Image 1: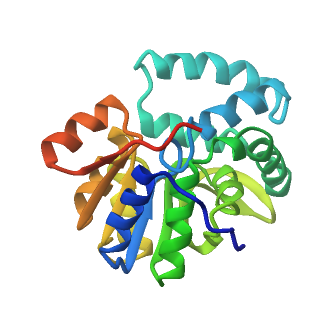
Image 2: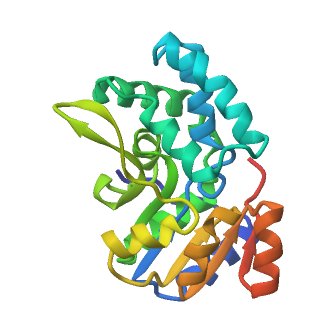
Length: 237
């Protein structure tokens, strides 16, 4: 997919130039909070519970479970995995259709224009660009259509599939230390640059030659400042 060139603010143009002048061969980017404002994974989770995409039994379980996660009683890896495997028994095509509808209706307007422009220019310059996210693969597939990143360059939370049916088994979970693991297993190269917004991106940023904290949460901003990483806050949408 081709996107028209964007007229950027002086601040955004300076950021883009600072990245492009590095002549990157490989760049990896987190998605939620980095490519767009907000958490599409959490948003889709709540949206599909409200619309009965999953069974009543899963709906009854998922709300209290997520509340426990927010209280710190369920760890990040476990919750991210369960937000994928709760679709067990469903047709993947149906879940993909729901995720695409959700993203189109709620998150296209949240995309940071200058970050999408950066991805476009990097790809035009021949940079290999990958999306690395703990959000489920279905939502990230939908989002990457707006960045021109192909499916074979997406590393996201992924369930096993058999005969088109989602199974109760995770085959990939790129969050925290899982992000470098996924990169090493699938890309097998050290990224020239990484872009992220939260503490769950720290290990990915640390493994890369150049680290960029984009729209950072306070938990990442402190580390980014201490580590002398570039911090960039996108223009208001």
